[in-house]
Image (cartoon, rainbow, N blue to C red; front, side, top):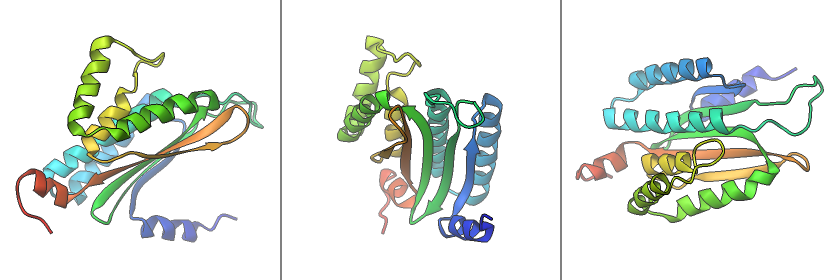
Length: 195
């Protein structure tokens, strides 16, 4: 039997505000965004931080919704697994958004190279790169051209952490961790000294 209390303790230890595992539908996406927005209104008293966390979360969930690949093998029930996972937590002066989804292994190198490129750029370069992609019209088959990752990096102001786990010869699991600063960086942006 699953040790629910142990699971509860781990979620409490990491201050997990909300978590989800399952198939992400458009209705569920809307419902979760409303729920998180309400929770942020309650726990975060700095409007600029609330707005930033919510904007990054919207991008992360849209990425999950649009870019989870169906696995190229069938599970025991005969259904292709399109499940995804996401969590949001608040700790150590940051909000953390974690996402995980299935990706076909043949797409791993392309996604890795897009994220690595995004991580090499500063905020001004990210803005220029975003405009370049929009102006040259190079979009992926799912419509993004990597704009989602650029947006997440721009809005969070932090480097993106990620990993890929091979599940078999055809399928992998992609995890993304996004860090969003709380008060210290917001104060710096507003020209106020912070500790």
